[in-house]
Image (tube, rainbow, N blue to C red; front, side, top):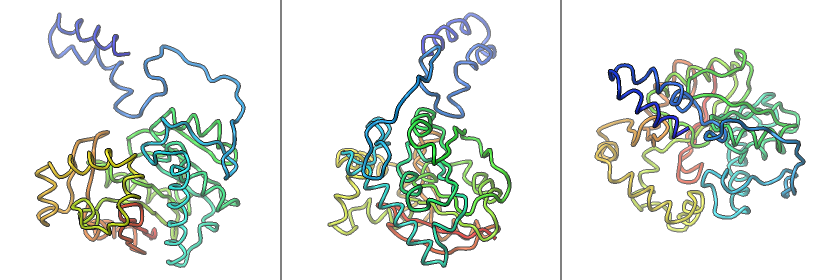
Length: 305
């Protein structure tokens, strides 16, 4: 694919620059909307398979390359998903809802099912879906967690292949930490598919996260933050890159309610949780805002009105 792109570039340089996109678009278009599986291959097949060795929850553990930096060992990776599922169930219960009574549940940005596998166990009567732009991770889920789960590849565009008002719960762990310009449109799309009285649960980096990033969090919690980031070196890199941004200082000082470091697929976004909830009051009522409910991130639970 990269070699084809180089050929396109050479071809375009021979003519007028405005013709460049006519040549390059077929090579670039797929990367604008989702992450293709084995994108350098001209063809691929999905062979007959058998599920591998099962972890304690009855499902195979994903390979390390699908962990999305959650954990440095298989044990900690699986435990992080279990802990986040339990935290979500506790937040729902505190608002008078129950995970097992949601009926239909969507894990948006599920990757390789780190949380989905535990939701399947905790809500066996629910119809559980996972969706992600990462095609390789979704293919792994389809071959190892389906059934009982259901999984689809989606795109960065705010449109999901589900009918109106069809979910009792949609959740996204560290999802809106990576959506910048399209955040409002995504919230509108989620409002469309959640039934009245259903819930939206997601995590954000907010001013509570600033305290952690600045080194003012609970000292005993930092090893957990490091592990959930793929190790201390990865955490330190995240902190250094975040603090080096002038826009971060603007946010930290209260002079902005949102900022992004990087754009689109490379976005790392922070929100003022109060402002964000107020902005969403057109379609959601606030049930809970829980600082450090998802590692160092804050979790937000909204009810669809």
